[in-house]
Length: 351
Image 1 (cartoon, rainbow, N blue to C red):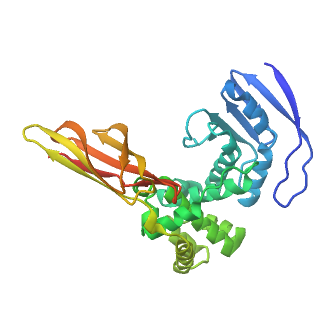
Image 2: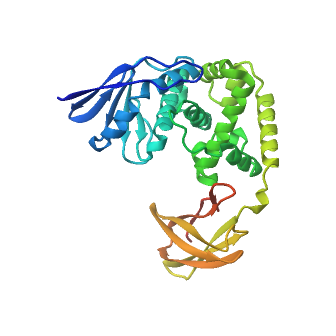
Image 3: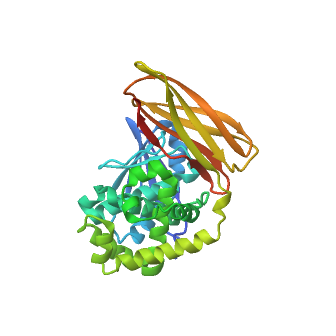
C-alpha cells in the first residue's frame, strides 16, 4: 500500500471564515480509496486527479450540508464515485458520477443531502410520495453547498412550465416516476426544487427541520405539512401563487407543441406500424427530433430531421406481432425552455 500526503487549505463556507489547513491521505488497497475527516471515497484509478482535487473541499461540502440539514449526517460516510451516469445511492454509500467534473461538488452535496434526509425521516424515505420533495431538496442543497459554481439550472422556469401544464398538484407529483416519464424528470425536479425553495424562504431552515421530523411520522407530504404546524392548503396556495407570478414572466405560447399518434395497419398475426408525428411552432426553421420506442421491453432511439413551422410526417416503424406492447415518445429541443419538449410517453397493446 502506498500513501501520498496532501495538504489543502479549505475554501470559504457560507457565512464562515477560512478553515484551517488539514492533512488528507490517499490510499491504494485493491480499489483506489481516499479518506478525509468525514468521507471514505472509493473511485476508479483513472479518476485520481479529480479525487485529489475533491479532497481539498469535500469536508467543507459535508459541513455545509450538515449545517443546512440539522446536523443529521453520520460522522463518517462512504462515497463511491463511478464513471457511469448517476445511479441511485445504496444503503451503505453515497454514489456520485464523475462524468461532469464541474458538477462533482454539486452532485456530492446532493448525495449527502439525500443521506441526511434518510437519517431525518427514517423508513419514510422510501415512500415514492416524498421523492419529488427529497430530490428537490437535494438539488437545493447541492446548489448552496457546491465548491465551485456550476451552470445554473433554470429550475423555477421548469416549475412554471409544470404549473402551466397543471402538473404541480401533490397527487400528481407524488407519483414521481410516472410524472417524470410524462413531463420529463427535469420538469418534475424543478417543481420539487421550487417547492423547497419557496417553503424555506417563508419558513426558514427551522421550518424545514420541523417538516422533516413530521415526514418521519407521516405517509404523505400534505399530512406531514399539517403535522409540522403548517397548513397544507395555505402552503400550496402560496407556492402556486409564486408559480403564477413566475409563469407570468414567460411566453409559453412560443414553445413547440409535439404530438405523436400510433397507426397500425394490416391483418393476420402481424401489423405494420407507423407514427404520425406533428410538430407545431418549432423554434427553428430546420431542427432534429428524436423518437424513443419500446416494443415488448426492447428500447430503441432514432433521430430525424424536420423542416417547416408545421411539420407533419408518417414515420414507418416496421412490423410487430399482434399482442405486442408498444410505447413511444417524441422530443424536440426548446431553447426557450432549456429542455426537450416531449409528446409524453404513450402505450398501446397492438390488436
